[in-house]
Image (cartoon, rainbow, N blue to C red; front, side, top):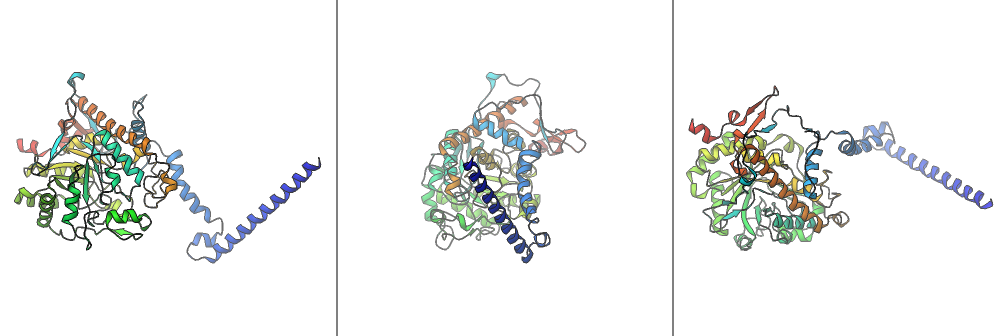
Length: 496
């Protein structure tokens, strides 16, 4: 009995102390809030005003997990993420009871099923496609679906290693992004596309200009199959890349050739490329030095600018890029100003068919391969791009989801909870390479398989044989029109 009374007394004292501490903390917060001048809500409503920021922060979490419907979220909704999760886990991706997609939303693509599709034994596997026929070492790319540019530095070491190993297992290429070629891109033995950004990371000299010596060293690696000159990125056209100082450790600084612990901001364009002639000079130079296919990555701004580009290409056909990667204005990034993300650059849905038509009009259909990028993560997205005229599709965020990304939107804070976009060992330990690379490979294979399934359903035996006539696009009144009537391909117009 005495022990119980003593215990109660101790607990009472502890409780009173806790109340006292809470009151002191509350009083301190009250005085701080009253004295500060930056936040009017906290100044006018001390202590209570702090809950506004807390609830705003938690609102993002609650919307994602409890309140938003399956197809409501942006930039990617739950239905898209769940499909990727099932695909990379190796479980069935069939669903029951019916589609949750609203089929009357303006712009929704609907594929036209064939009345008599090919039989199962007439099903053909996608054939490899040659890129860079005039290069000394052309590339016969095995897959139409590949990994888009993601730099080491923006991504963590285990994330890049998992992507490299997964790419090798699935037979897809891995784009280095503008941050240079790290040992981790090469770890898995996959095909690599080296992206040359405006800062020339990895192939720059002491002055920050292009180094032919470094180019030759990179090109000598058999895994490096192509080079991509990055002119613009969908999420931030007109602005260079941004790598926060916290991410620039000694290793990343050495790979990129930049000072350690200093924020790295790329120029908004290549200083030596100010017109199309200079662009073609650069393409020809890199192709001559490396001997490998060279392409460009850009964002469509207007038909007039694109037509001017192809006019210049027609004047110098021997120097044209071997491929053009079109990123949409809705493209992703780790860090970019909101006005650029929201307001600048043509959507990939508009840009890809437009660029395809211009490429074909100027006679480069077999010479220049068209790669579509920008928010294409599910089989329907990829099938749309191929039917619209793309030869290949690349995805970054789809593969980030396969690594375990939960769309926490913390890519630029070095606090990514899944270890994908952080260099904090505390978070990186959650990304187990031996598990994640298998998911990367499963995701790539499942996308290819289901795109082939869509192609089979519309009556062709290979995805690149899909055409705009195989799609209908939902209009404002809820009805749909054939895509080839809305925007005919150049070959169809030429035959009229």
